Length: 276
Ligand SMILES: Cc1ncc(C[n+]2csc(CCOP(=O)(O)OP(=O)(O)O)c2C)c(N)n1
Ligand code: SF4
Image (cartoon, rainbow, N blue to C red; front, side, top):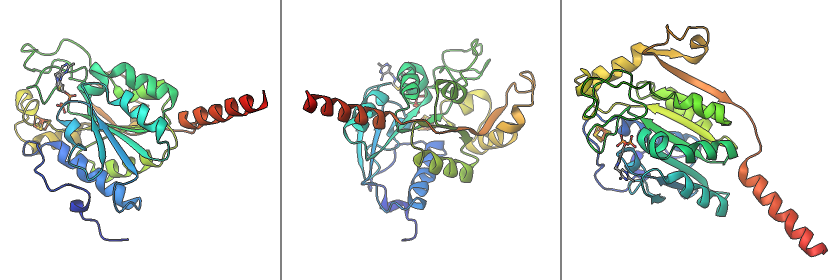
């Protein structure tokens, strides 16, 4: 096994992210996870992403086949890819707006079907690329460009939603917890079924500076200080959990993967046709 070098997995082009953006951390955690799983390159992977800053993580920067689709439609595209090439690792990267805003129903249904893909949602709690509009994940009372008096809505708990929809693996970590995030990515990539990771990440440009966290470092300190392990959180009240970031593996279970069911059914139908 060669020593890890991120350059082996990235095309030599400038990444489009602002200085201090958490997307850089997500990239390095993911590529290191891939390397630790024994992949010297990304030939066994296909990446799908929609629109938004996080959608630029794989495409066109990873040395791999990737599909950059329209806003919110990465999961339907990934569904098609996985069904025709079931032996490949299909990985979706997207922002919270892309995956639990415009693309929410696709995410829920892919989870319910147990489509055997990995979805990595970079939750920066805002629409970053379009200038900082409120997202379905924006904290209550947070000031954004579209909520100058503070957000009046409660945010989604995306990981809990995905657990309830039937995921085989679901975890939430932050870009402060790099070793844990990398470990979760390895578990997700080896899950035989739907795997979801919510990576809470800093967007200093469109979110941090508007909520009084002036630097990426302040945002990371916030992630560190407000995080609560999921096992501990289960014993806390809703009141105690206000403003907290619940982290850890939420679920890890086995269910028949969708492609297995589909291909077994195709075989069964073919046998029926031959017999008749
Ligand atoms: C159909 C459609 N609606 C709206 C947009 C504008 N738009 C582009 S990216 C985006 C949201 C990006 O937020 P998120 O997915 O959270 O990603 P981030 O940029 O924060 O990483 C929006 C609303 C679009 N491109 N297409
Ligand atoms: S706007 Fe935010 S999410 Fe987008 S690249 Fe800049 S820091 Fe990252």
